[in-house]
Image (tube, rainbow, N blue to C red; front, side, top):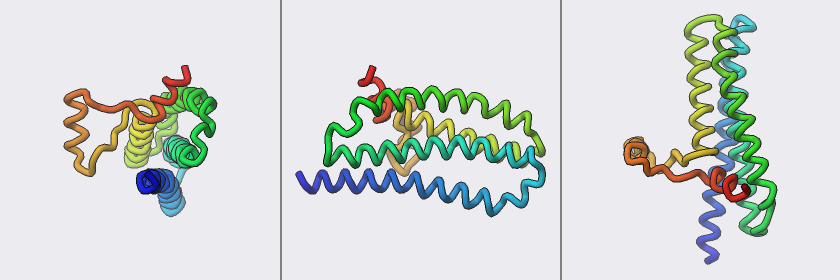
Length: 166
């Protein structure tokens, strides 16, 4: 039993820290390439979706830390997590919906807009992955495509927790 719990804990640490590392890499790249964003519009166009994806990754990382804590305290934040993440899911959806109008209003050039939309799409994928369906099954993308085609996607852990809290 201890080895199974240890394996789960290691997996959760990997997920939690991986999201934080991704967050750090995104912002490091932003600050390295910021000099190429010559106008305030370009800066806003990139910064808004980057903030969105950062918020979602931070929420995901926090959730994995909650699950790590639950390994030693099974009832840790059990009543609060579902309702809080249910609210976050709605807030994130509103912020995502504002993404394209903000990117288009702050249009400065096609390359900047394409990068901004790509980051925004990544934020949507992460949002779906955390708040609706698990999108990571294998390193082989064909596994995911097969599950989508067969409508065999599993509900995400956060989505299950939100549903349980209702």
